[in-house]
Length: 286
Image (cartoon, rainbow, N blue to C red; front, side, top):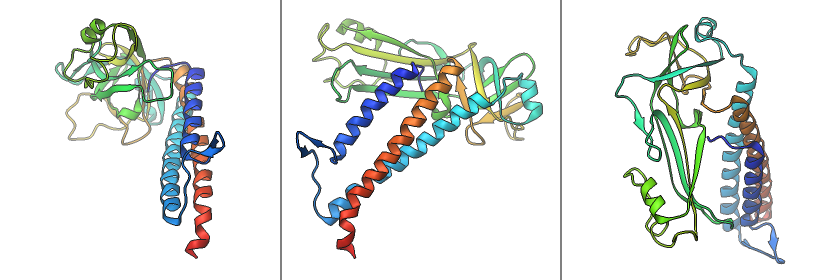
C-alpha cells in the first residue's frame, strides 16, 4: 500500500471500473458489444470467471474496510499499556531489526530498511498496461518507545509505506537508478523505445527504514517459548489484524476506506453481471 491522496485513488479506481465493465462485454461500444457471448458453455465459463473476480474484489474490499475501522477505532497508547491490556491497540515507536544483519537494502534508493515496496511504470495516457516491474520484501522487526518492546511480524498486505515518486525522462537516468539485479526490466520496456523524453518512467518506492518512527495497529500476544527474542510481546499478521504504517494514519485510513468502498461496489457490480451472463443459459440446462 502506498500513500496517495484519497481523491486520486478514487479517480484511478473509477477509471479501472469503467474499463472492467467495458471488457466484460455487457456494455455496447458504438452499438456492438465488445465480447458477444453465445452458447451455454461459453456463458457458464464467462459467468464463473466474472463471479470469481467479483468474490475476490468483495473479499479484498471487506479487508480494506476492516483496516480502516481498526485504524480509526483503536486508541493510541504506549507499548507497555498495549501489552498490559492485551487488546487491539495503536502503538508508535522506533524501528530496529531483530539482529544488526537482518536488514534489507531497497533497490531504488539503497536505504537500509526492514521492508520495502517499489513499482516502475511507464507514464502513459491510455488505459493500457503501464507496469514494468514491481516487488516488495519485508523482515520481522522490533518496535520500541522506551516503555517496552514488541516483535512485529508483518506480511505484504499489512504494510502501508510512504511512497516516494521520481519521474525519469532519459535513458541515462533510468540506467543509473535501476541498475540493480533485483529489478527485472524487460528490454522492450526500458532500454529501447523510450528515448530521451518520449515515454517517461515513474519510479515509486516506499521503505520502513531502520531507526524510523512507525505506527502499528495490532493485538499484542505473549512471546512464544521457542522464540529467540528479548521482546516483551509479539504482533503478527497471522494471529490477528495487523497494520504497519510510516505514513499519516489519517491518510491510510481514508485510502483504505476509498479502496474498500470501491472494491465492494465493484464486487457487487461484477456479481450482477455474472448473473446476467449465466441466466440465459439456465433454461438450456433444465
